Image (cartoon, rainbow, N blue to C red; front, side, top):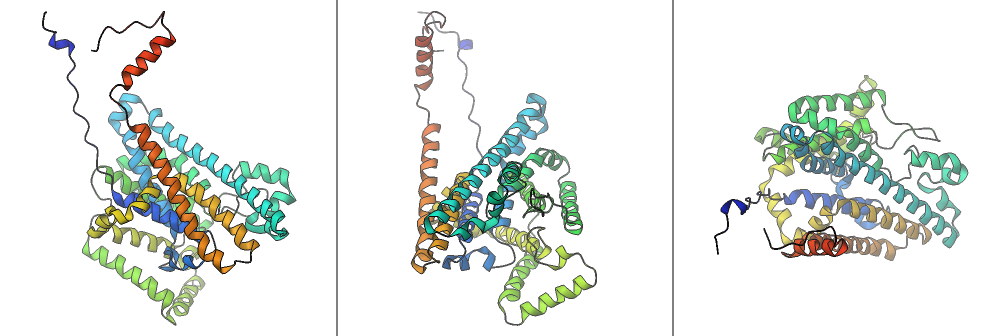
Length: 419
């Protein structure tokens, strides 16, 4: 028997070395989702321990910055010059916009679910007041125009208003990524300028059919998303967007301590708030001298940025996030959209129960842990399914060819051996 021709035997390519997944991303995203879930049930005792009690910002800022980091890590590689030269620009843009479309559909589902739950609660508990909660009144008062507004994101239900902003930001993300790869600090400066202009001139998207504007101004909240995006792009290269500095770390840490003093030391809060009022009287813009959430006022923004920088500079934070005790948070973080959507449905459903039972203390204590357990179970099931589908047995390709041959025996050639 002659020896096989070596040229016909393809030499296996060396597997591409995958960058280790930073445990901080999943852990902090999972923590932010857990805090959002708890904060979306007002009146429960656990809300006194979420992020909003430790400074000016809350889990919303954490959600946006983590979303930006995730977008930078997931999509930036497709926009690199060599990738665009090989495949073109559309394969890079399509996944980002596809994700935006998914978020839009999830938002519509959540909106419909909340409307249904509050209507059912009003009927079950005999509480017509539930129909007026969280901007729901327009659904019953003017259903034709309001349903049109819901579809166009012009009318948003309370506690279900974060995904529309994220959707808009993802639509603009390809342009931001392209600029970030060439001139990252120019993107940062432009983003900061847009944030300032949005607060100065109240730039926001309008509501419909009612008057007013979105609860989260996309023109303002894009700044913290873009900051996260730049962090993620630099992380892909194994670098930092803002280098470690003892001076900067000290300033950021001091500001975080100062916010706690402002909030909790008697007399300091009223004094500082009065000074902010005096600055506003001198003509400083309101988003500099207030704690406004819609336009991401300066105290909230600085607190969020300082918190991100300090956490990123502490080495043991990475080890803590990688610890087995943080595994539940990492698990929920890996299934971010699923956990967020399910958490929103559970939180608003629990709100109906709490309203209907006049916030009975046992339920206020018991429902949040039950909800978190359900979210963790759901994340585990989704993660298990993902891992199961990603495992490919060695004989799977052969089975696939056999199935094709059986499906079309006249056209599919019979394999005589393996290559």
